[in-house]
Length: 143
Image 1 (cartoon, rainbow, N blue to C red):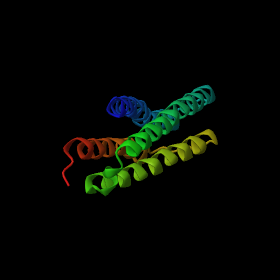
Image 2 (cartoon, rainbow, N blue to C red):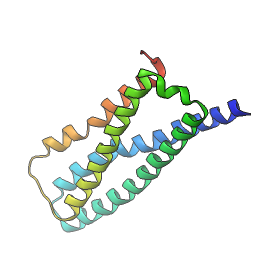
Image 3 (spheres, rainbow, N blue to C red):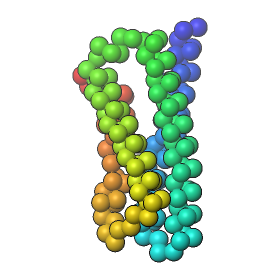
């Protein structure tokens, strides 16, 4: 029974991680469009889209975390493995990135405008690094 639960928790952990990352990949792109919008209706529409997407991806993050904790509860030996400890550090960094997305939503909602979206375009690429490192650590277990 415990092995079956572990597999279910793992499947749900991965499914909600995909939901979370879908938002992490798309939300910064919305920030770029929002920053470049030159009409009030467009900016208002982007504010609504960003807020809704952030809610969905936050739910994905919370459920990813919950199922991750359930997995850890069933296999506490993970905490003693270096690859897992590094993964947790990257997850902490991902949480910081997630929080910065919320800060961008607030800035853009309050009328922040920039002519140069280069920094947002770089911000848009950060989740790729997190995804590659976290998935590589979880599958390869190199340490």
